[in-house]
Amino acid sequence: MKLILFGPPGAGKGTQGELISAALRIPTVSTGAMLRAAIKEGTELGKKAETVMASGALVPDELVVGILRDRLAQDDCKNGFILDGFPRTIPQAEALETLGISVDCVLSLEVSDETIVERMSGRRVCPSCGATYHVLYNPPKKQADRCDVCGEALAQRPDDNADVVRNRLAVYHRETEPLKAYYEQKGLLRTVQGQDKVEETSRLVREALGIGQ
Ligand code: ADP
Ligand code: ADP
Ligand code: ZN
Image (cartoon, rainbow, N blue to C red; front, side, top):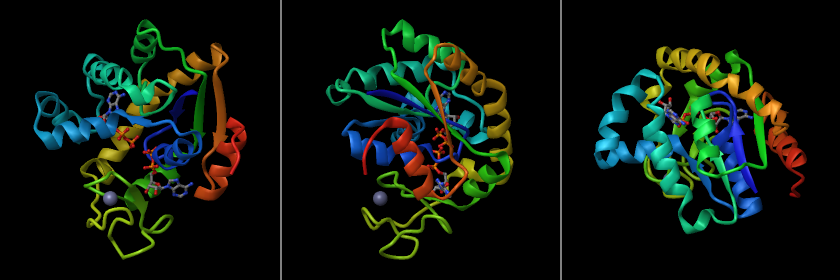
């Protein structure tokens, strides 16, 4: 299955992506995570992306398409993959088609702007493995403020502060949301309510994809 997980920043794409990835045994490919890794490594790409990401704007299409193309060419993607955070513009969606990649489904998580702001302010991430938590809705289970997977101290993403979140939402509505109509026209769009608790959203996601427990 080649799946696009679509939705505003903080909708729960990463959270639901982990679940689908485990159920279908296909990798999640997150352009945001790859860009953050490039920043950490101090590569040329990372240097170009860092200030753009800190402001909440989008990294130029050609840079993102380049890293995505290289990632999808790897072996573990040959039986399918879940795209989280890509495409974010119509030219990116067109680039995917130019690469000869046709997706089976675009699953859109529907979440209001007010809920997004609440989710982002409580989001915590593991700087080591990238696992995502929420101080109220999905706290770590083993030790307070530490990653369940690797024990690392959790951190807040620099672009999750309130001002940058507002900008990211504006960018989403202006540049990314038009993709819903784009994929609707192609008959690929399936919408799922993402407003409820994680477990309820997971149930709806499984139902929409026809996957079991
Ligand atoms: P979120 O999890 O909140 O949706 P991401 O981790 O997907 O955020 O993205 C973080 C930032 O990385 C974005 O605000 C943007 O600057 C950059 N980014 C990630 N994916 C893309 C993309 N497909 N096109 C352009 N910029 C991107
Ligand atoms: P995205 O990848 O779309 O940016 P995340 O999966 O990182 O979104 O989720 C954003 C924040 O909201 C995280 O802190 C996550 O733990 C939390 N979260 C995700 N889904 C839900 C939900 N259904 N209800 C409450 N909080 C959620
Ligand atoms: Zn971790």
